[in-house]
Length: 134
Length: 293
Ligand SMILES: Nc1ncnc2c1ncn2[C@@H]1O[C@H](COP(=O)(O)OP(=O)(O)OP(=O)(O)O)[C@@H](O)[C@H]1O
Ligand SMILES: [Mg+2]
Image (cartoon, rainbow over all chains, first blue to last red; front, side, top):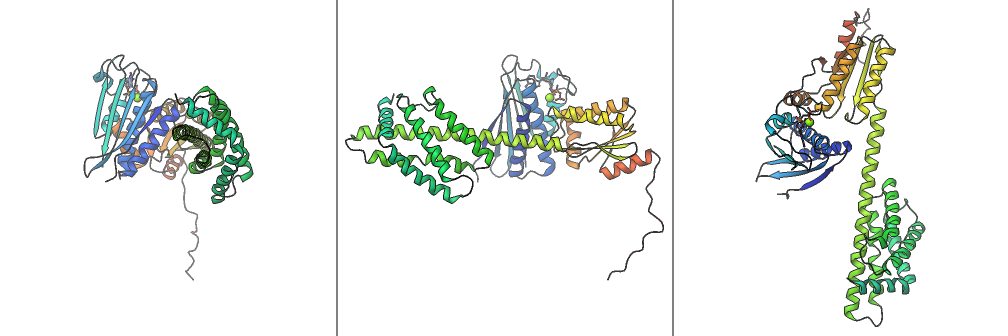
């Protein structure tokens, strides 16, 4: 069983979002996700990476290949020290945006992932975890 | 802290420089022989001599921290070399070997120093090895960053090359999008299309996204805005090339493009021609099918 590997990428500019997508793609291929699942997790990662940059003022993405003893998957944790989200349930609503977007990034990322966890409070930054299993 | 070790190392570099440089040249030549052709051994040796010179003067400040100000000129030189190697396509190993191959000559020189107490010898060796390691790591960091710059530049060049607006028929334009869409450039691409719609008084614009790897909310929003703007200018858009995995992902994401879409560019063209009142028919009489020889 190969040891779980993890890689932390900085998100400082829009080029970094491209990089996050590429690395998530590579990890998804490595754990054997099919084309549809690859596309789903890469797209979810793209959404969260952009939120980290646009609203969080930059941060990190930690990409990890996970293994629960047989099943493998990809997990990504996005973290920033930005302003945080005052009301998570409002932010998770389809169509809610404070930045002139479609307001579908957070809710879409949840629908595109098998696991989704968000923690945030005003002034304490934001942490979002997503995972997709094979 | 290990000021004494650092001074010992600096003294050694001064005293045994000729010998260390001769040994290092041999090391460099051996390493270079394995991957010949990219850089001459003379050039490597000349760079080595400069490195050794700066290393000696930095170490004689007594500072053993390769990230400190004393080493800034040496770091500049190493950074410059490392960057050049990254652009020339050197491998990481080749680049790292340049610095790390200095170790053996330095160790050999220490070993044959007369009148060095074991304590002094171990202090000197320790400084030498941590310093060379630190400089090697620095070299690799610069190398890595430069490689990434190369990749980003190439990506940019590719995406710039690959977004022409093509006239398919009188009144029908196609915009085959290829690559990443969320750079500042998306704006330019979309404006190009709108300008071409004006220039050609186009009725129909086909936006083909076969070559777009990811359609997220930002890409979707760009597409929606373009479709809306085109409509205001009197042109209808057709989106083609939405691959099955992209279609499924868009459904989960919750984006609706509310625009006619076709699986392929060919289907989109057929629809466009139909809309402008043209039909593609086979030439008659049909060309004779030649019997196989
Ligand atoms: N990391 C974050 N830090 C602070 N606020 C955030 C963060 N991520 C999301 N938000 C808030 O949650 C809102 C909803 O985010 P979501 O990604 O769903 O939509 P959006 O980014 O506005 O638009 P879209 O992602 O569809 O382009 C954002 O408008 C923003 O106010
Ligand atoms: Mg978003």
